[in-house]
Length: 127
Image (cartoon, rainbow, N blue to C red; front, side, top):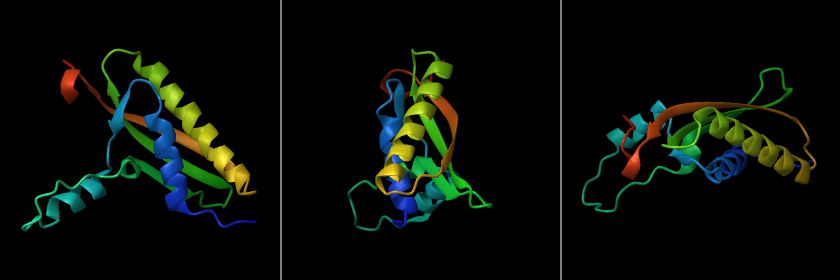
């Protein structure tokens, strides 16, 4: 059996979530935002881009029964929020299960989707 890397599961989940119509982006967790805020910019003029994986948390269930994944989404204004969140859930779950199966590491996958905000046109919060 192949060892499954958490970073790979994060990438697979983030990629799947970002393919869902209506997803404007993934919201980094507070730890990522704080780390970015205290990083010295110095003479570096290139903007620091937070990777999409920062909006996903993946860890093993404490009892070893599989993976727990949380996806924090920013949705675009327009489509029904519940439908988009369900679509994110289903696509992330399917992508991670497929990835694990390809590694011969079939395990249970639990996905939670949190909608952090709904962005209006040009990324502004909807009113």
